[in-house]
Structures are given as C-alpha cells and as structure tokens.
Image (cartoon, rainbow, N blue to C red; front, side, top):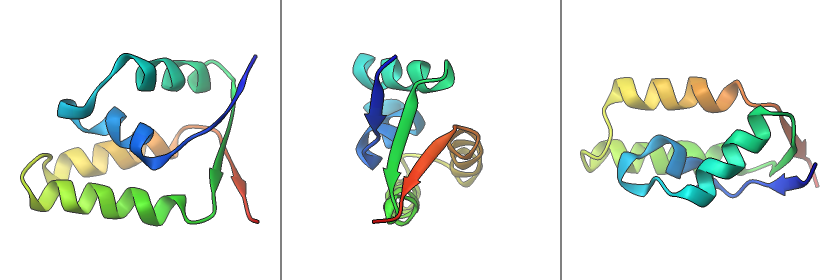
Length: 82
C-alpha cells in the first residue's frame, strides 16, 4: 500500500464542497483503508487557517468546520516533527 504526504489543500478539498475532486477523495479513501499518511508539524495551523478563511467567506458554516475537524482528526496521520 502506498504512503502519502497529505497537503492541507488536499484535506481542505474533503471539507469544502466546492473543492471536492476525485484525486483528493482517492487519498482519503486510501488513508481510511490503512495507507500511511504523513503531515508536517505545521499542518494543523494551515488547516485551521484554511477552514477559518472559508468560514469567513461563507463557503462553510461553523458547524461544517466542526464536522470537518472531527472527520480529519479521526484519520490516522503520522506527524513529521522535523
């Protein structure tokens, strides 16, 4: 099974309906099925900023942000601390 380095733009596509795409969905399915997925240490800061900006622009609701964070937090990411 392949490993992935998950960029925040890929994970934001999981949360924002207007950014959904087949490649991002395929990565999510692979991670949910056990593929190794790495994120850099600053990844959560970028994710939260992206979701905050999307909420401010009316692209997602506060409830949608909470749901997205819950979904993403449940995925088994390995954090690269370097």
